[in-house]
Image 1 (cartoon, helix red, strand yellow):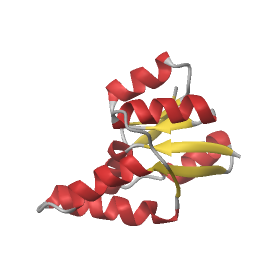
Image 2: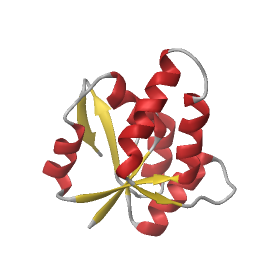
Image 3: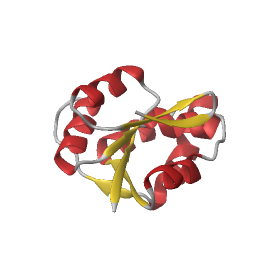
Image 4: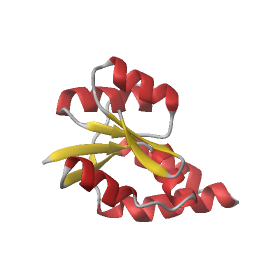
Length: 122
């Protein structure tokens, strides 16, 4: 089963603008294992501990990801950990961060992003 690593930007984007992201991914790659790295979870927890709409969005993102598989991180920057985990595990990365998407593509891994409220693959 294909693993899909989720970045905080993707999760927060689908919370802010609900889409059929799950169904779109299943339609494109079949059944998949959603994965959240511990360092991405920590990033969301830090955002959720704040105040305002961004904190609420991060909290809802954490709730949405509560059923995901959680994988450990090393000590590198979060984006570097995501790229490394994608390469090591042959995973697809779901992100709304264009810089991270470029890094993932440069490592010859597939990216799932959002364009006009729909999931895009590349």
